Length: 345
Ligand code: ADP
Ligand code: MG
Image 1: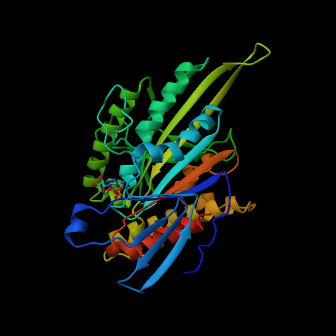
Image 2: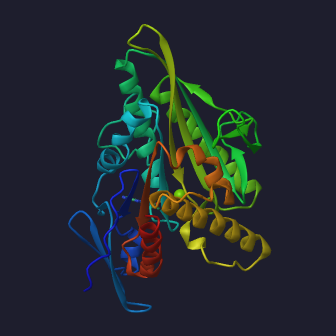
Image 3: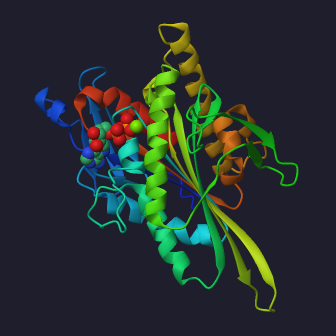
């Protein structure tokens, strides 16, 4: 087989792949694995059903089916925590077909424990919050931690942490005081003090997401969920003065990638697909413009990239986790997910 096209080294954008285990129903359907992982960086997918093609890809790191949540966390998010505390904005995206493990990776299974056990199935969001509070506790600084949770569906933004019964629609404005930054009018940014408080808010947010989906007759696979934690802190400088610093971490569970390129059978589905295409394709163009240091970055071409503009490019770090199913039944979709992820860089 041909050697995999090498991925460009870029510290500010990292691309990971996570392959989940075969599910019980895939095993029942006599699903076999179409995916081979060679070492830490290379992955081979064989599409026996459709075009009988074999494709090899290389990424910054490939996580196999038995990789625990803790290991994904340690590789992807742990290194970003110190950046957030140093005042950088960081973003992690989960991209992949519906059922491939995006939500498992981002949220995972968690209750509202006082402490997460390392073996638990808690995903990146609860683990990041836990680590952040641990780090902040030992830091000699005054700080505040705020979280927000938004859903972006059909280019409309909804607040999932609002106390309103029905998640309200939010509007975006350019922030006149900070170039390249947007303001989300009316967004509920909840101040949190403990990890269990965060988990509580997340549970409420998930329930809201269901309410919203039912009201709009939409499936959650057709919306993006954006979790943001913002840390503001006041520190003493060497000369006895004080300075303020803000760092931000966005953890984004993207709409199912199988929607890309689909026209949809009804007007409603066609409109959903068009808006997903717009956001996912713009995201990929934005990241590759940043990698190539292009002067013009098309942030404004989708609400997703506009919303995250201050966290993409410049003094920021971005990671993409492409989640895939190992089953040969999904091989075609898996190849297109990996193509997308590879193109992002
Ligand atoms: P998505 O959000 O991409 O639609 P989910 O995260 O809901 O997919 O995952 C689909 C199913 O597969 C869920 O039941 C989830 O618990 C399971 N799953 C996903 N990834 C893994 C994994 N790495 N290990 C074990 N189970 C997983
Ligand atoms: Mg999901």
